[in-house]
Amino acid sequence: MAEVALQNLVKRFGAARAVDNVSLDVADGELVALLGPSGCGKTTTLRMIAGFVTADAGRILLSGRDVTGLPPNRRNTGMVFQRYALFPHMTVAQNIAFGLEMRKLGRSDIEARVGDALRQVRLDGFAARLPRELSGGQQQRVALARALVIKPDVLLLDEPLSNLDAKLRHEVRLEIRALQKRLGLTTIFVTHDQEEALVLADRLAVMDRGTVQQVGTPADLYERPANYFVADFVGKSNFLQGRMVGEREFATEHGTRIRLAAAPAASTCLLALRPEKVRLGAAAESMSNRYAGTVETVTYLGAVTEYKVRLPAGDRLLLHEQNHRAPGPGDGRGGDVTIGWDLAACLPLVEPGKIDER
Image 1 (cartoon, rainbow, N blue to C red):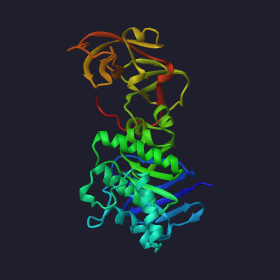
Image 2: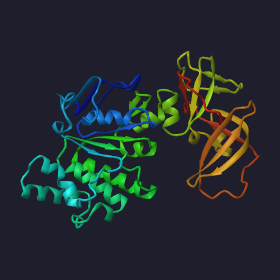
Image 3: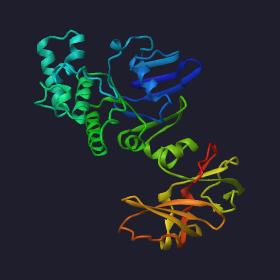
Image 4: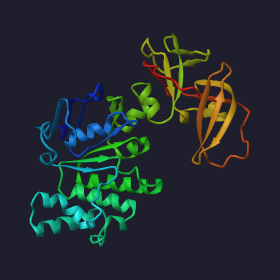
């Protein structure tokens, strides 16, 4: 039985549906990320699971128990908030102990569990400090320890890394993942950061405008996006609009002909092509789809160099090439090149959505 089951959840704020018929199962010990842009309904969904927001319709089940109408203190969920919500006048130990005191545990039991929680998050020796005496990463660990000390059935994380700098965020997210796996704790993690979701999650639920667009593993969503929104939000893609002109041949609006690995749905009018799937120069010569092009811009991005290439018909494509050397000044700009990609690289999408101008 799923540890967490959301069944047709709805939440309205006035006339707007912040969460619109959301259903999702999270297995015991699984980490699922709710991923999407600001305002998509992911935090509202998390707060309904915790009990801080009341659902207007649908059900929330934890280990098969319907908790939809229960207050937060009867759900046994631990929550880490975006801004940590630590009590500034309490020490680290007092902050962590707060939930246990509300449950009226004995003093010796509280001290033992607080000490264990501090060791889990590597804050031994910080028990007497106040939150203002801690770094952002240390405050985040205190908030995590406070959520873990009550031994929750489900851990809920609401963008807990968004206030950290990039390097610290990378380190802490790996620590959270290692701790979650070691404890085998069912976890739901809200984020708008696609890289964070891909690194942390067993599965992702991509949300937009209150609805779940697709649920799957990181590889599922990246390699097989269900629609334009998922392909555009998870990673970077080229989008080519047009129509099928043969069983396995697609013509863009500009007239570029592209061969596909298999016959897609007849209604296909959009292809997604990841920049790293496109080859440049000699590496493109063996590709099934091969074209002459002109390099318009070259952007050095550290690990990769990004090229914008214009095809003869007028289509413009971004491609990423792994950097084995730093490109020289003006390297490749304005040059004629060959680019290409394999038949399976283009992903047919039935739903065109809105295409950004390149």
